[in-house]
Length: 190
Image 1 (cartoon, rainbow, N blue to C red):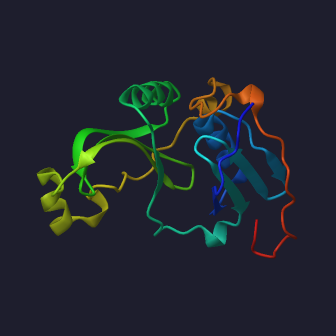
Image 2 (cartoon, helix red, strand yellow):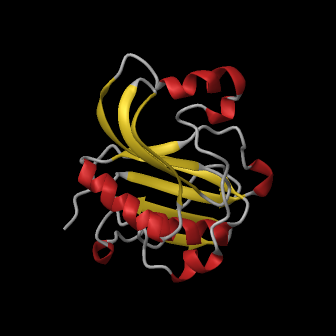
């Protein structure tokens, strides 16, 4: 039996293509959406403790959003998750032993169909500097700075629909049932 940790974070993102988003996140999270309705999908995750919903609204997809991510507990967990995500063709970039955001980290990045960037990382220790390889990036090209993944590359549809679950975050046999109703359409909450 899984115990839900509270408080847990809720995030809601606008997406251009809900079907593509569901295909990506089913693979990335390693479980199907908890709720799917017209123009709406929600995942309730226990590890990390997160409720994330997606609202189809192409006009409101923001291109200036930073990134999302989560920290794993061990290097072994990072390597296992990296291997599974690589097998599904989701990995955009790896950064091992980097000093980014003033911390020594091992990490990898994936981008969903709308370009929302996810960083999966293991934190080794704080650092007093960022990796020198990023110094010129800050001066020349802000899009290449640390903590910013490269532009999304297309993931073939067959990877999203036929590959085994790419990123197991919890035992899918014990996936939680939907327990809350979404707000009325157009109300802006979910």
